[in-house]
Length: 325
Image (cartoon, rainbow, N blue to C red):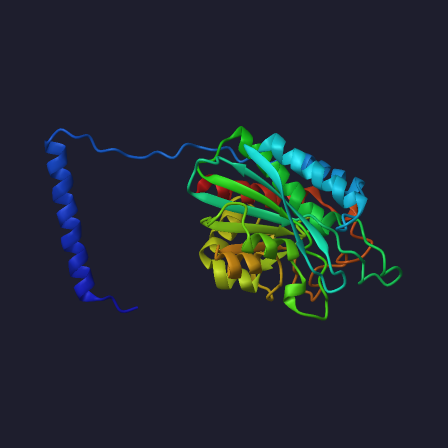
C-alpha cells in the first residue's frame, strides 16, 4: 500500500490542531468527558427458543390461507406484544405463481421506539405449501420446524433477553410471511412475497435501519453458516462483524469463514428495494455439497431436526451484535 504523503502531513497538522484545542479547553477548566459503554451480559436460553419453535409447529404447517397459518399469526403477534414495546400485524396481499390472491401477514415488533439508530432483525414464519423435495410425499406440506420456525423461535428469545437488558439502539423484529411460496424453476420474485411487500410499503414511512440480520434455517445439528453471496455484496462490513462476534463467543464451528453461493431469500429484497444492508445467516454447507441439508423441503423437517446448541450459537451471536452497536 502506498501512503499519500500530502494526506499524512495534513493529518499531522489536524491532530496538532485538535491537541492544542483540547489543551486550551483543559486550561479553561473544562473537564474532558469519556463515554463509557455500559456492560451487557450475553444471555440466550436455548430451551426457551426450542419451546417457541415447538409451539409454532404444534399449530401445523403454516401455509398461507390455512387455519394453522391464521392461528400462528395471532400467536406470534402476542409473543411480540409480550416482549416488545409495540407490536402489530401488517396486512397485505400478493399474487403467487400458483394462486391469484395471497393474504400476507407480516408480524412486527419494536424495542426502543424512540431511538433513531435502529437494527432490523427478521425471519420468515410461513411453511412451504408442499414438501417438493420429499421422495415419498412431495405434495403435502412439512412441519417446517427448521425452515421457518427456527429463525422465529431464536428471535422471540432474543426479544425476551433484550427486554431484560435494554439495548442502546432501537430494534425492529419482523416475521415475514409468504417467503416459501416460490417457483423452484421460475423467477426469484416468485419467492419472498412478504418481504417484497414490506420493502415497498414499510411499517413506517421512509423507514431506515443501520443494518439488518435475517435468520433462515438456523436449527440443524452442526449447522454450517457459510458467507452468503448477496450478503457479502450488500452488507460486507456487517458480515465481518457478525462472524467476528461469533468467533469471540466460541461459535466459529458454525460460522465458518467460507463463501457460499448467492441465495434468493428475504434479505435480497430488503437490500434491493429498501436499501438496508442486510445479511442472511442461513444453513448452507458448501464443504460436502449438501447445500441446505437433508431436511430442506422434506417431511423430515420436524422437531427432530432442531438442535439446541445451534440455536444457542445463533442467538448469542445476534444478541451480542445488537447490544454492541
